[in-house]
Length: 165
Image 1 (cartoon, rainbow, N blue to C red):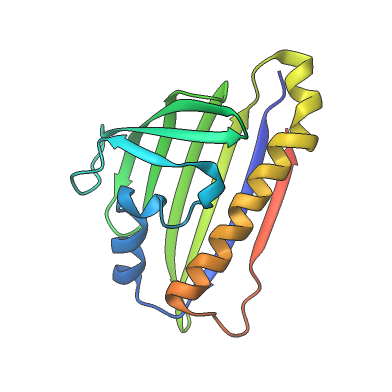
Image 2 (tube, rainbow, N blue to C red):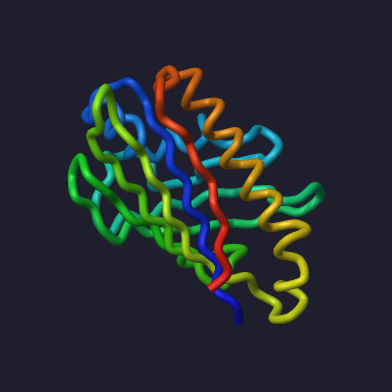
C-alpha cells in the first residue's frame, strides 16, 4: 500500500494569534471547504481545540456518496501547530499536521498530510484520477478563501506539492 504526502504553504499578512485563532477553531473548517463537499460538523466542535478532541463530520467526497469522518486532535502546541488523525473515514490513513510560523510581514501556514488510499491497487489507480485531483481542488479553494479572509502576502509564493512515498 502506497503512502502519499501533500504539502501546502500559504502566507498571510496577519498576526500569529489571528491565524491561530482562526485555524485552530474546528468550526472554521466548514468556511474553507468547498460547498460541493457537503461538509457538515456533527459533533466535537463546540470547544476550543484540545489534545484528545474527537470531531465528527459528514462529507460528500463524490456526487451521490457521503461518509462519516471522525478525526482526533492528537497534538496541540498553542499558537504553533496541531495534528489531526482520522479515526474513521474514507482513507486507510490520514495524518494532518498544521504549522503556523511568523515570517516577515505576517505568518506562514504549512499543511503536511500523510495519507493512504484504501482498496489496494484499485485505490492506487484512483489516486491520480479522483483523490489527488479532489485534494488539489480543496486546497486551491482553501487558498482562495483564506486570501479573501486575510489578504495576499506580497513577495511570497504559495505552494502545493504531492509526493508518493
